[in-house]
Length: 274
Image 1: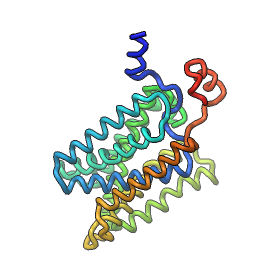
Image 2: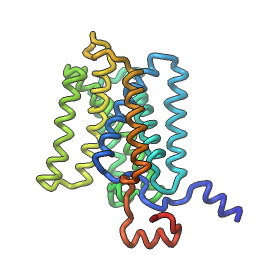
Image 3: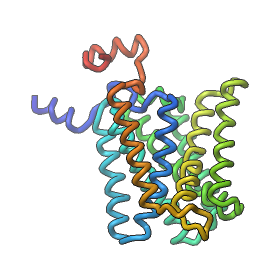
Image 4: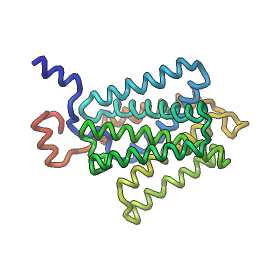
């Protein structure tokens, strides 16, 4: 009995897919988390560095610990992890640029190579990059490594577009709004591979949300509307909480197991498929 309890507490293999079903709600919340992460990171960076480090690193570690500890998808836990990655990923990407003085062209290249390496390693190990396959601990690790890499790349892309290409925050946001429609149309009309379309769109959500967050929060003298990073972060947080609460109540974003998977899960835990 003691050994069984210990195994359960230490986190066994997942009972079901631990990421949400891809719906319109998923994309709305995802974009909000990117904007919230950008605004929160910038707000903290302008304050006490120690507090920023504790919130960024501490929140990241705690949220991922919770996500890996649960054995099935829980909307609140998953999106808490996504928000923590958004904040930490932004801090990490900005830190490399500021501390090492690497231009945005270099950071975009660096994170693009990093993301490609993670995806190649994941595919060689598991034979698929589908989010519907996140049913083992190893695949979950690959998934969150990929998510972190996409946030770092997206942060660099957003900054590169707004500053190096001189688009400004608003026009960069508009450009990424157009760009995110590419995989949607390609998948819908031209049968683009669904997995490729998903990860294409997933990367673009980061600079899309961050560009509009910067446009709303930054001072007017650098192209923003000057609502303040703290205000933007707070409003985005309220919207995220409301939408995630809706997901928790309706459970419309829970992936439904296939028939063989459902039979297997029922043998392990009858409550898993209820």
